[in-house]
Length: 124
View 1 (cartoon, rainbow, N blue to C red):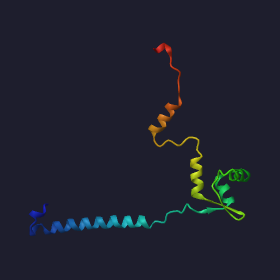
View 2 (cartoon, rainbow, N blue to C red):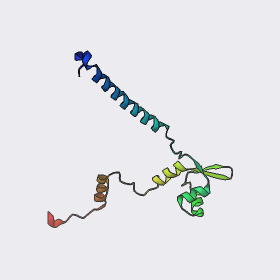
View 3 (cartoon, rainbow, N blue to C red):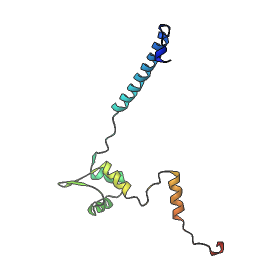
View 4 (cartoon, helix red, strand yellow):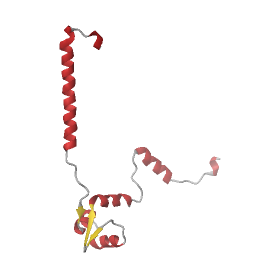
């Protein structure tokens, strides 16, 4: 209905529509507020050496070797080493030999680019 053509007889339907719209807006607001109040997992948590090499599933000697070569990002406080989980995850992602394809098209392009064939002179 247009605002110019409203009459007193249209009042009940207009009020009903307004109530429905207000109810839907209340639902959207409660959903939005519940999403904001959700507790997000904190990934910036310091880990000890034992937790870190268990998390990486690598031998302790290999872990210390990578720390010595400055491969793994660590923080040294006195005699203790601390590693943040989010930095460890970033280090794992950055040490990939080939990045994971984002989509089917990217994967297909990477596969086609990896196969090089010599030109066949018979087809000329």
